[in-house]
Image (cartoon, rainbow, N blue to C red):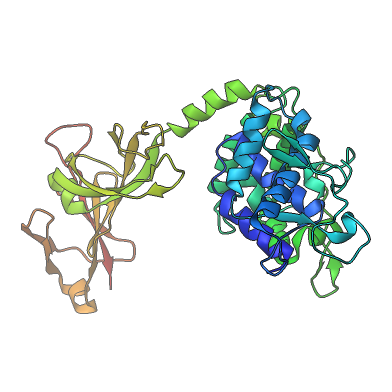
Length: 418
C-alpha cells in the first residue's frame, strides 16, 4: 500500500468521528505526515518493535513541537496530547523518508542517530526535518472538502449546512484567540462549505478536483473554460454572512433554536374522511440522532383527529413528535392536510364539483343523473333544461360541510360533457 493510500485510509477512518478539537488535530496530523514525507514502516524493513516505538515517538514529538505552541494547551496537556496521539496510532509506525535523514541508502537504523529520552518520549534532532513556519496545515496536501466538513461524498445540502453550523462556531477565532491552527481550520470550513453547497462548483470539484475549480474546465461546444474559483479567504465575513451574526456563542444558541423549529409533513386525507370527520391512524417517521453521531429513523403510529369541516391547508400540531436530537430534545411536528383526490369529485372550498357525461339525445330530451354521494346516498338529479356549452347545474346543500356555519353544507355543482 502506498503512503498516500495508507494515510488516506487512516484519515477516512477518523474524519466522520470529528467531535472535539483533538479529533480535528488527528486529521491535521495526517496532513502533517504527508507534508513532511513520513512513510509507514513495513514488515520487510527489519526494525524491531523497540525501534518502531522509538520512531513513532519521534514523529509524534516532532509534531507536538511544531504545532503545540499554536494550540492553547496548558503545560500539563502537552504530555497528554502526546500520549493520546500514540494511542491513536498504536498499530502504525512512521519513518521519515531516507533522503530527509541522510544520504546513505541503508534503511536500517543509522548508527549516528542520537536519541534523547524526555520522560517516555524518544526524540532525535538529527532525523527530523526542520519546522516550517510559512505553511499552514492546509497547504501540505490538496484539500478534501468532504473530509474538512466530515461529511460523505453523497451528503445532502442540509447535511453540509449542518456540518458547517456545528463546526464553524467551535473554531471561530474569537473563541480560540491564541490558536493559529483554529484560524486555519475555520477558513478551511468556510471554503469547503462555499464549494460543496453550490451545485456547479461541487460538480466540477467532484469530477476534476481542486485544480479543475481553480483553473477552469472546458464546457459547451466551444470548450470555453468555466469561471476560475478562488476563495476570498475571509472566514470571518463568510461566517457573518452565513449566520448573520459574528458572535459564535450567540450562534450556538441560535442553532439550538433552529434545530427545534417544527417539522412540516403533508397528510393526504380523502374527501370521505373530510366529509365525515373521525380519527385516522397515521404512521410517522422521524430521525433520531444518537450520541455517537449516527441516526435512526423509527416509525410510530399516531391517532389523528380529522374535523368534518377541515379544508386543504389545515394544520395539525403534534408537540414533540418531530426529529429528536442527540441531547434528547425533539422538535414539534405539524401535519398539513392535502386532498387525496377522488375518482368522481373534486373540491372547491366547500363546494363539490362533479363532471357528468351525457349523450346528444339526452341533451335534447332531458335525463336523470344518479350520483353516489360521499355519505353513501344516491342522489337523483333531473336534467330538464337544454344543456349548452358551459352549462352547470347546482344542487344546494350537497357539498362539503361548511367551515363557517355549523350544520350547513356547500353545493354540488354538476359540469357537463357531451
